[in-house]
Image (tube, rainbow over the protein chains, first blue to last red):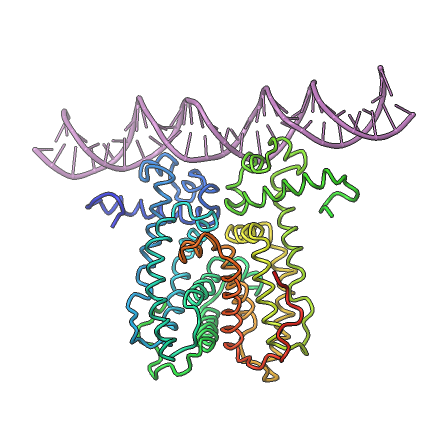
Length: 222
Length: 222
DNA sequence: GTTTGTTCTGACCGATTGGTCAATATCAAC
DNA sequence: GTTGATATTGACCAATCGGTCAGAACAAAC
């Protein structure tokens, strides 16, 4: 399971490491790489500071491990998409999956956001490599859909960014959203309402009307 | 002009203060409040560290001054909107203004984003007060438009958040966007293309078709 | 040229930073 | 119960943190 070390760590060690990772994720999410201190992470994990370094080696190694963990969680998104797929179902599924993912890993998402705000010093290769390929492949398929008249002619890159930004907003800007609507946190109703809104606007905005009779086949649910 | 001190500062002082503010905005934008160091700000401003404190008093005072400066820049957005306004023109204008604003003040926008990621400790009152009123007022007008059948029945709060997030994305996630599309920076063509895309999808997605014959009356242009 | 007020900055402060290390504690294997 | 590996952590390190301060430099007034 672990990133670098090879194999059978005791369950005990695994539990401690996960505790540290979760504590660190919280602190890095709020304050970014530079702003997070090992002492704050240690306090959050209820462990001595030296213990954090014993398990993680260094601040940078800990941080990179968190980035990798978060990247792995996104691997499942929009994995099987073909030119034959139904555009409405794919986009709808994309929106829902992204919403659920943000709610499931709020700290990890914020950590990613902070990393990118900082200029993505540790994510350079990933963004310009793996992720660019990911986007290019999906963009090509979307362009085919447009060419076939199954949806409007829109730049698929901007469409992908639109779905990313619109869904991520409710995790990364949760502090703003909750204060503006005057609530402590978003509940299930809010999230369902937001998801329905985004599906309505984006699908309709892309000229996708028909959505097959099947309401939802492979969507991730909370 | 300045925030706290009363009146006539010499032009010399004004120039130096602006230099410090711009340097600090850059550092705070990348690393957040905790992650930014006065030394890094001083280096960026090409001034001794003690000089920064002489002009700004403290790190916190400097930071708050930057937040206020950025809030002032947003005051003009969507100011005159009435139930009689044309929904298409208003939303279109909103999208364009927000896009231009983000491109004009990228560091200020990122600073804001970092503040909200950190849980908005310094913006609590603003978000729950001034900004909430702002959103509520506009939401009420949008709801009237829906009731009059001039656009779809959508939750206006989610619509406002959608425009915020979709436009801000290209400033705050510029590091990701540029690497994914394989370019050093977004140029005028990209921005025009993105703006057109967002207008198309959001207006159409909200069931706004007709847009008055006037192409664009009061929009901010770059 | 002295005075007065502002600007400027190197030197310094206690606190905190990421990280090391030696000493101790814990544990399973024999 | 002895042994060897792993786990734990207080004490410590140089570097950096935000902030203070005394005094040098500077300008305009008289």
